[in-house]
Image (cartoon, rainbow, N blue to C red; front, top):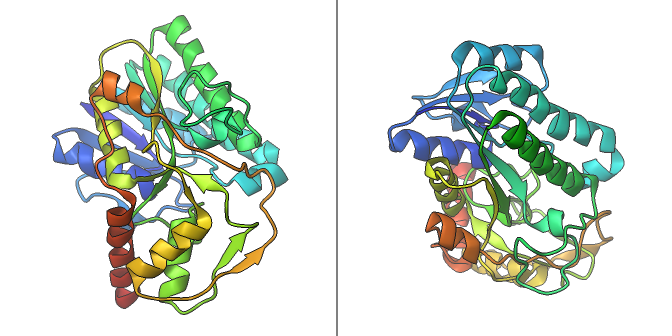
Length: 310
């Protein structure tokens, strides 16, 4: 299958690209390199350095007539979405519309969309949160991702382009950028290993559902092959871990024991998030395979190797 992966030089997108190529797909990558790096891109994938909002991006889709789009390019910083909601909407919503308008006119037949399971639901009424949980996002980032899902429903019903929206938990693992992307595990790992102080925002009892990036790549591959009805699916572990506990686990994984400081809470941050992934198991035969302790050890080893190489 001829696939375009947007954001494919970034953290999650590059792992998705690797898996698709390993399974015989032809993959192009579109990335503006605002946070991704060319070294992340599989040597068999062609990198197109473009903004998803640009005319060049639309022209690329029209010219190459991709069969499928896996859309990971996004403004993903919740704090930035709060301080600059117009930029968030520009990248996330208008960027998707630009790609879909080009795709509908050039034979696009499938979309896999990287959505959010944490930010889209808001504070949970109960947990783990299923796909039927009320959607009450607390940040412009969550609102923009929900808007994109609704737009994909429009393109499904108006133009017959099916989609799968994958609502991720907090994805972590090798290649996550501790500077350019949201990700407390990457930030803590780098700072612990470089001897810098670590800070927990608020009391540290806020919880998240941490899912390993290889499991997320498998979910994308399964979604690409899925031929059923268009659907939104949670991709998580069903387990919630608070930030204080996470820091302790990372101290063990890195072998660096250091007490964190505490700072103010982040604007727009919710208190809890944990996802019910049973629907993904039913629809995609997917389940998370890497538990948090093993995933943190793998991530810490990558950061150790990265620090040595740099």
